[in-house]
Image (cartoon, rainbow, N blue to C red; front, side, top):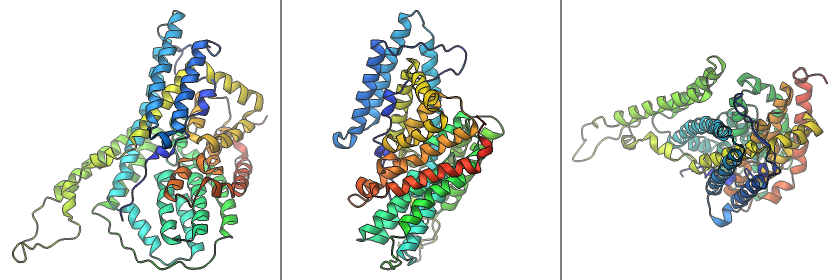
Length: 484
């Protein structure tokens, strides 16, 4: 059975609350001098446009309208308003500089994700994920063992393959094993969502939010691992509670086989090399990590060329008549291998959605909105309370716009607080099934079994893990916090 990765259109909640948040600190240089138009009727109109676009994003499933469409249109109208307001004050440069800054932000994210998505899709095409699923299903583990194995794998794979892909893969496993045992499937899916989000929180490659933090330079690559122990606690606390409800009975044995296509492990090796190049470009050469990712994508294209050419070698002499010997490792399908097919399978709607979100929020920031929000949250509440609240907000709206707002506001925080908000924005989405791409995607995968309300029944256990992970972060990383 061919496993397909559903579209990340499931992030239908992403982006909304930013419409109500105040301004983006855009200054990439001294040339940008944003004005405050938060009380101007045109500024309020820009907010209303974004709210309307967000409402259409929420209604994506019922309207069957891709989420990128309203946000891209909203971005265009918002920047028209920005330009007209600045022109009315005789400023012909700020809007242009600000939008170029936002386009640079989007360009780096777009190319990085495009390379990563192409690698993941190629590994899927080569049978890596299907082989892992078949191996787990066919080993005859007990339900409790499957619960812990899938949770551990979700935690371990998500730092590299991202939490969405990992959660979908592991959910497929528990559904294949659990069958009609809906109670087990529900509990195992909750465990997978929590584990995938927790595992993604201590790696720049585990989630879009951690990638954004890393690319912004707020946290260096090796510093993410300071969140490893808090992330483990975030997963283990609810996992132990949930695990006690899973019986030790063995499911019905299943014999599944999956054959890896030629070059599957080479693709994995190239992906690891690409990650190393991205990290090295950022840490040692002080270049954007996207440069390493795109170079690695070039390597993958060269390897795709090799697969295609090597598959065209003349077959072995016919045994009799028209019969030919089929040699393993030289599948005829490789003659048609095209790396651009994997590139085409990238989540283009999601990538264009990011364009709409980044440009829309950037426009609202240029009007002065996020600056006010930064003062309200980080000035009045304080960094710790604000960062914990960020995690709770991410459970309602999804973590991408939440983190983008924080990075845009760029509040003055010590290193420990930046790690805190990186973690809370990543794991806070586990509190509700709609709070993360992993949760919403698994709801689609296990439709009618893993639901919003079945997840909500265990939110108290997940909240215990959320609180425990924050406490552990303050305990083990105390030296990273400035004394106040």
